[in-house]
Each structure stands twice: as C-alpha cells, then as structure tokens.
Image 1 (spheres, rainbow, N blue to C red):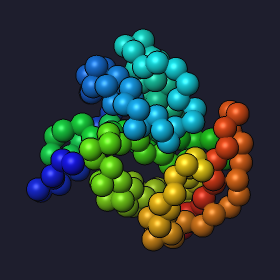
Image 2: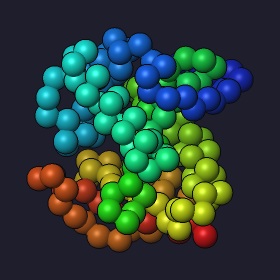
Image 3: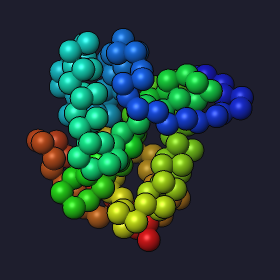
Image 4: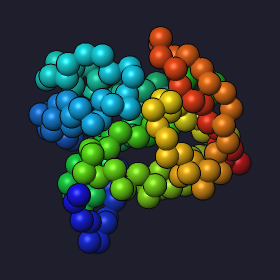
Amino acid sequence: MTIHSERKLTFVRLPEIPPEEIVAHMSDARVAEHMPLLKFKWDQRAVAKFVEAKEECWRRDGLGHWAILCNDIYVGWGGFQKEGDEWDYGLVLKPEHFGLGARISRRAIEFAVADERIPFVTFLLPPSRKNLGGLARLGARFIEEIEYDGAQFLKYRLDTD
C-alpha cells in the first residue's frame, strides 16, 4: 500500500494523464474484479475512446469525470455523469490507493452539494462490493437492484439539497 503523508488531492481533466498510465490502471485484474461492464482489453485506442467520451460529457453537461491526483500522483478517475435526469457518481482507483476512496468521495460530494443542478446523486455498485459502510456514512440509502447494460447493480441515492 502506498502511504500518502500530506494527501493533497487534485482533480484534473483526464487528457492530462498519459494514456499508458490509464491503460496500466484499467488493465489491473483487481480493478476489473468490481467492474462487470469491463469486458474488453484496455489499450491506447480504448483509452482514447474513453477519454473522448468523458470529455463529451463535460461539453454536453458542464460536468464529468476527473483524473484524481494525490500529491501529484495519478491515483484513479471518477466524478459525475448524467444518466437521464440523474447524476451518477463513480470512482475507479488504482488498487494501491483504494484507501483514498472515502476522502475523494467526500470531496466530490461536497462539489455536488454546492452545484444547484444536482439535487441528488446516484451510485451504481456491483453486488461483488461487500463493504458498503462508506455509503451509509455519506448518507446514501439503498434504492433497488437494477440491470444496466446486461449486468446487475445495487443502486443507492444521496440527496444533496
């Protein structure tokens, strides 16, 4: 596990991260274990399509996913994506940085609370995720089990207003 002494978090846009770093991150089997929609091999082309899709969200909705840095080191990506009338929050960290998830999520949720466009945030988690105490501590509540793109997810909601 990586130790983060000062733990300075920075949210930047995904194009600022070298594609090979995202390839390595998303190719880690420990990451794929909790991503049922990850059914393809990550390479430079996949990263280019991924980054372009996330940047399109920024252009369309004025909000999207960030690359997340801790002490100027890339630790993962996450943020908000509009799904219909809902803002869904997702976070995908490198395994050696899983411990930063709660802190990063609290910071992102503070962003959502301050944004009047976001009355609530949804979270879709695969049933393989067993440690869900962090969602409860944030105030999120279980809504239902849903199917999304052929995979099962647990849907939670956090009111931000």
